[in-house]
Image 1 (spheres, rainbow, N blue to C red):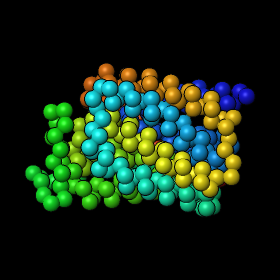
Image 2 (spheres, helix red, strand yellow):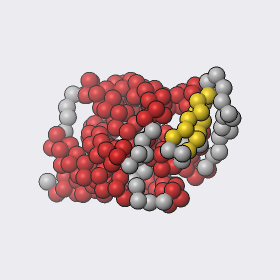
Image 3 (spheres, rainbow, N blue to C red):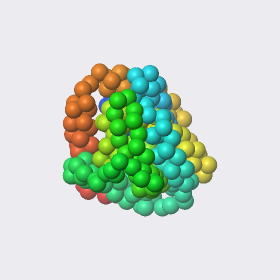
Image 4 (cartoon, helix red, strand yellow):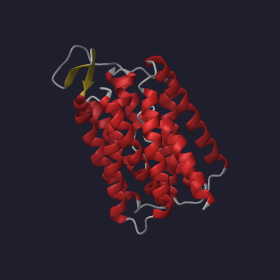
Length: 266
């Protein structure tokens, strides 16, 4: 019973932090659950339930504040959702070691994207496959084929490990498309909710058992964390969000990778 209370408190805190940046937090959730004894498959399902509730509550706040670009989400999110379902479905058919390797690889990639701050060459004024989008006084461009390809690949792999891809889609929107960080965060919150839903359905399709004893208290904690985190985010300045996001991703990537290197069995 004590460890469930501990998990609920931890998930409340983590969901609060991740919701501030429109992220699901699956990489942190799954890693902690694996460290305390859950298998990657069980941890992935618990993580997705937690993300579903946290992202829903956060999205409701961001939507009301006008930071959710639904047209951008409608364009780039379907590839992620579809491939998240596929990834979730095949996750229960793969050996535990394969899922663990995927988890470590995704964390390393997330850390690289954050640390290097790579600036991609953006599209110009427009073109056959380039969408020039104006939203809330901001203008940004989206290379449709490239962006959808990248979000689809992200969806497949994060669906396998019980994450939702916000950690990757925000850099894609900001660096590749030039979307302001606060709009990317708000838009990501809605996409995270849909991706978590599709990935969860994929997992439940082939899962043999669901740990409701852990899911219920953790889910309630994440519901509250999502609301608090989103309210904090909408009051923060753009540069504060950007800088804190970079620091958060670096710290999380570093901690998880170090723990995996120290104990590669889990």
